[in-house]
Length: 317
Image (cartoon, rainbow, N blue to C red):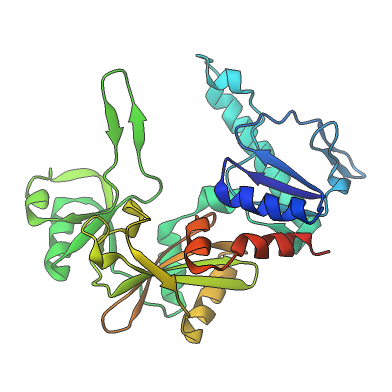
């Protein structure tokens, strides 16, 4: 049986359709569903795991961690003013990490994807690893100093600012608060800064001919060129709106694909998505990797049928 960990996700839906159409036994767990852990026992002789009253680890042949995590906290607790919720989240995190680490030892290459890699994904670590592989990466700065950011601006003429982790989005009874996403840093913005502030992440602005999204699953790589310069809303970041730009299948130069494979190996990733800028001079600048990046729009625009390819790979013995 194939065990899939996901959330409400279009890609997972399509993979499930292919698996079911081919009479493949599969169990899908969604993050929004509470999983009542049956047992996790550790003795001197063995570790024994039974995920639910019906599912034993011995029944599973392959695991695909598409995204999100297994939730052991009942939904009603999240929805109540339950004081020790942070304590329970920490306990849940400990269980989650042990399960993945232990199951990866058992299943090895048959455990694809990773909650831990998704959770711990770090843009700065990626830049460091990519630079060591002799890839072009944007000059980057993390700083809480007005003086430092001004010096960086003067050296690079044009900067962007982006988040190090996730976009911020929350509401209270009066307002909705959202992070701006990736944006151009102007001299006027710098003038308005305090001398010291919470650290921000800025990069040199890379002029682009187009962008490339690369999805990989195991040893297969699928690439798409995105002509985001044609739209003012996406000229800085194509992810602001996916549907307005011309997107076509793209063949990476072999030396670039070879470097991506080495970076994925360095980061111990067997699936994920790379974002790349190609400059007018045909230089390839690596921006980041997402261990659980979106792929359905890439698959659909390029007729790659990646969901079918994933289903075939999962169904292999």
